[in-house]
Length: 113
Length: 117
Image (cartoon, rainbow over all chains, first blue to last red; front, side, top):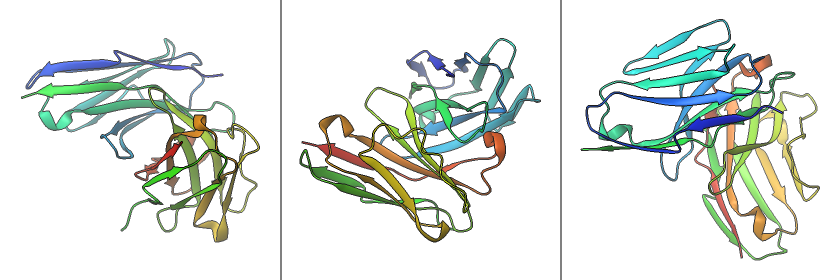
């Protein structure tokens, strides 16, 4: 069974800093990897989806990279803002059918003004 | 257009009672997923519906859990004889076509927070 791990569990940074969130997975035979954001008391919002053939995806101040062979992905956030404070989750689909997704437990980010 | 909606937003029930949770996916989305998020844990897959195909129920934790999707749209997750360990946030998501390998964005609802006393 695929296992997804996110480190660190929590991160606190001052506004303006660049930061990196890490995601690792045990089965490298993935179709893609997604990064989500979850605000307190709310559902998840998809940030970036990287297909298995891609190395990275960018959206605004966010850049996600994927290294399938090593089972790792990183989410880079540039010039962090207080509004970036949220929990960030990564997820990969199950390798056979892709019907179910395996999520990490998330990194809780706090950006201090 | 409207996003995924779920009701109720919060539900408090007594141990042993049955509960029904509702999900309205985005109009036109053929794939629908239910997940459970327990305190301090990651999201746990429960069940997946894709069009008229038989649902993938491989994530349901026990036979007390069941789900239906009527007319390819609204879905109801039912938990019978609730237990305290069922307390969690139940999230629903939908995607346009449910592509093999999950190669498309899932849109999540705000969740239903269930507390079993």
